[in-house]
Image (cartoon, rainbow, N blue to C red; front, side, top):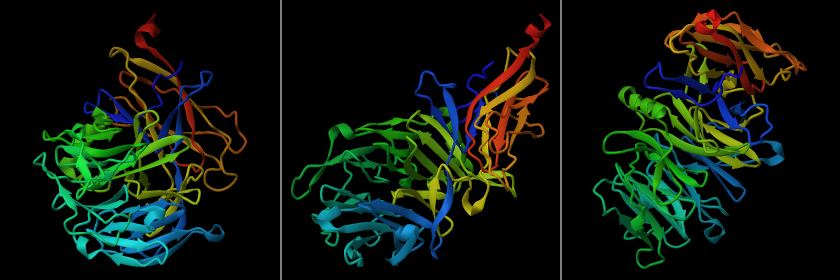
Amino acid sequence: MIFKNALGRSYVAQAPITDQEFTMNWSVEVSEAKGATTDVTLLPTPGVQTFVMVSKVGWRGLFEMNGRCFGVAQDGLYEITYPAQQGTATLLGTVALDTNPVTFCTNGSGGNQLFVTSGGNGYCLDLTTLLLTQITNLNGKATQGGYLQGYFLAFDVNTSTVFYSDLLDGLTWDPLSYFQRTNQPDDWQAMQVTTWGYICLPGQYSGEMWYPTGGFPLPFAPDPAGNFNKGIAATFSITNAGGSVVWLSVNNDGDYEVVQATGLQPARISDFALEYQLSQFVKTDRIDDAVGESFRMDGHTFFRLTLPTARSTKQFDFTNGLWTDVGTWLAQSSEFTYFRPVFYAFAFGKHLIGDRETGALYDMDSEYQTDVDGRDIRRVRRTPAIVSEQDYVFHRKLSILLQTGDAPLTGQGSSPVLMLRYSDDGGRTWGNEVQCEVGETGAYSALVWFQSLGVSRNRVYELSCTDPMPWRLSQIFLDAVPQAKRAA
């Protein structure tokens, strides 16, 4: 019979006996066709290949607009190009260095300038001459940048102030051209210009939405309907994603959640399991260094929340509303860590993404089967528990319907295997791993199953794989009989 809900989201509940579902390096696609073989398929998250390598270590931001791509690695501002089908990076100048991400925005053909914030300072790049100018009026005052209705915006987290430039002129910033928060006592902690033309300004526990009025001398004003009670826990977790603004939020009770604003009011998109994990990260690590990034691939829009200190990357799929995990497998220590490629831009028809810890700028694609440093991608799916009113269940056979026959002709993965282990105490402890061959190249009808799996009252299965092939799982079938039915 079909193993109901065997393929799905990550949901490691606070009570282990409730649920221990875990999906690492797979995304969930819900079929749109009524005649599909299965309702849900696990699709492999994309791998990476190096697009270009720079001497500066650690990418801090990436940006594309109007066919041009720019990035900052360490303290170096680069323009990324793709001549003759070969990625190149040209160093244009240096910017202030700190541990925070860099922000970019442009005023387009009207001003032909790129505004960059880095290390708390603001910089203006002339897109014609490539002359990079540091804005002295913004020294120590530019945590994040934005662009709206002809004005560059610079947000200073230290004073909860938003500065704005002259119209279509990123080189001129009047010291008196600014606005600050007055309607609530908690200071703004971040700024994001939305896709619908508002300025989202979350504070410590609450926030507000401002809009362009065209007035003088202050061309912006708060929208009375845009006051909200969601703060922000990590300044650089905020980003535009899928036509909305998303960030890691905290309220004055210390509850952490991920929220999404598609208009003037944000709403919760995290689940109880993720929120519990976030609360535990705060106790042992930190989450104020979290980075939010968004990308769209193969019809799905994803938001990734990278928590580098907590060594975790959480991924939300706007298409189905489900959370999964993304990470790099460290074979030497048998553990996952966060996914180092963080900063994303779609340029030259490629999904480019920068590594936080090296000078590597990657091309990310679902056809690639390797992780950073050429590592294997380890994919894991842990199923819901199988229980029958605390009665014993006899497990005869577990069959997996997956795409076979696409193994490499030679080398690693030419004889791919799927690995299985299981727990009889709801995921608290695990037995030894067993393997099943899944078919070499051309073996499109290969059958994959495990049998003689014993008896349990609270069985959790975990499937994993590392071979470089497109692991697409469509269904799991379970032949299991409760003790009462077996006796009858």
